[in-house]
Image (tube, rainbow, N blue to C red; front, side, top):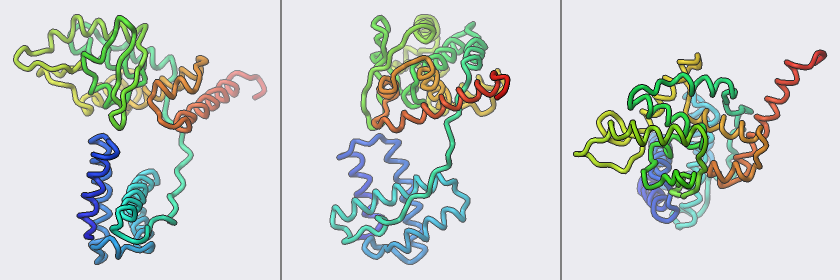
Length: 297
C-alpha cells in the first residue's frame, strides 16, 4: 500500500475508532506528512518498503534540521504508532520502527509562578469594562480550575453549574470530567457572566460559548494565549503561557496538601505518572526555600 494512503487510513482510525480530538488527529497528520515527504525524497513510497534504517535516518534528519528533543520524540512516537497500525491492518509484515528508541527527553520541570506572582497577575487586571471582566475571569479559571487553553475556549454555558460549584470540562479525546470552581475563580466568572458577557453577546449571533470576543463569537485558543501573555507582561513575566497557570495550579494544590490522585482527576490526566512531575516541582521549591532560609545552607 502507498504510504500516503496508509496514513489516511491511520488518521481515520484515530478519528473513528479511538475517538481522538481533531487537534490530535491534525498533529499526527502534520508529523506523518513530514515523514512521508522524507521517505518520498528517499525513493520510498510503499509501506512494506520502509526498513529500520529509513526510520533511523529520519530521526537523524530531524536532528539535523534543528528540531528539539521533545519534537523529535513526538515525531517518532507518531511514526511508531503508524507502523504498528500498518502491521495490525496487514499493510506490512513487519514494524520497522519497533526497535528504534525514542530520544531521552531533557530533564526539564514545568515552569510555575509563585503564589505572589499569581496574586499580582490577577490583581493587575482591570474590571472596568466587559473585556476586562472577561480577561480576569479567563485568568482566574485557568489558574483556579487548572484548565487547558482548549478547554477554556471550548467551555459552554451549559457546562457551568456554578450554583453547585463545578464546571463540566471536555478534555483530550473528548473525555468529560468535573472541575470544581470556588472562591475568586467563581466570583470572577459570575461577575463576567452577569455583567461582561451580555455586553459582548450579539443577538444576531447567538452562541453557547462562555468566553466571547468583541464580535460576539467564541474566543479562540490563540486569543486566550494573547490575553495571558499580555497579562504576564503587566507583572514583568515575558511569554506567559496558559499552561504555566495550569502547572501553577497543580503545584500550589500539592504544596497545600492536596492528594495526588485528586489533582490527577481535576487535571484530567489518564496516567498518574503525568501528574507525578509536580512532586518533583514541589521538591525543587522546598529545596529553594531551604537554601534561602537556612543560615548554613
